[in-house]
Image: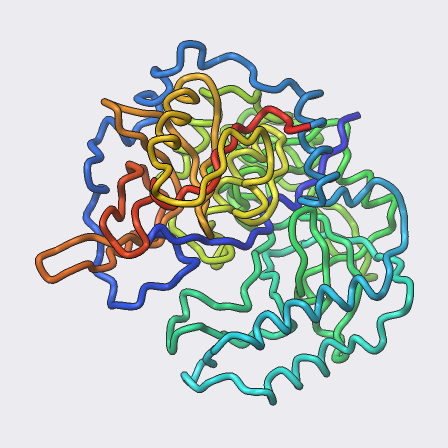
Length: 457
């Protein structure tokens, strides 16, 4: 039986092209137009790019190859396999991970919701709440599932902390967001009992305990490795309480999967984790539209990857998955999750997967980048890593390279100088976007080109 894990939608990363939300704009944003510069209606369709492939239906990796790809990522410590075996974790590892996040925030100049600088009192409260002194020398993980949408936070607080006063779209504490069905290991609990420190397959952070249902290890394994499962293949799928699909319960993002237990004329029956009156995990039957899911993973071909990417075209941008949306790395995760590839949570780690085609230090190597992109062109599926951003390469058109990505904004030259155009959605753009700005274009800022589908080992 193929071992499968979700945890795929727990993401943190965002980027900036002068670009995505990883670096916030320092001037007031102006709204972008309906389309991106140089992009026509035809270029905003998947078939425009698919037809550039000589063999778009060639399988890049079969199920066995995908399992190996995922194992390689586990061995590089880019993702975790939560169901290998029951095990214990050193308490020092848990404490160090939590303290690392607290210290990373401490060295920044941050602001609270009242636009006041965050001081030492705030961090003392956080450390007291985290209660790391109670972490034992060896931690035996508990197991569970998210049974309603939940934010995953870097520290145990709901307070919004920003790097610019009032910039609430970029909450520095937001790590990721977790849909229903995400499996997690629970390693620690806050002093007040409101928060639990969790690991998913691809991220770690604090989740409100009220959003987690606990289960035994055996129950955990059965749920995440079912004999048959339905994978969400649309931008969002509605889960319903009834087979007539008239009682909506929740929405989940592309790549989420659930045990499937039958079908009807227009729906698939699935199991979702639910909390019983005794507080334990009692899976319930729910229903999804047939067109929103696929039984088993989709085949990993160029046609399917591009089609999945374009299903998210114009989907709203969400820093760290805020409001159930996706940032740049969340976008990449969702696409590849539909074919069974478990990508890491953030752009820097995603750039370490697959086959490294080239590594670069700056814009002086742009010609080398273009040469590699043209050689990848109609043969491979590649992701391009920038510092703090990641994008899916689509191909070249009339010699110009293009990509699709979740973009917060970009710098544009005007007679008044450079301004930030706020985009806030998934778009197609050329790689010269932002050209001439202080940070440079997308092409200038590429530091890695990685072909997804070939192991580096």
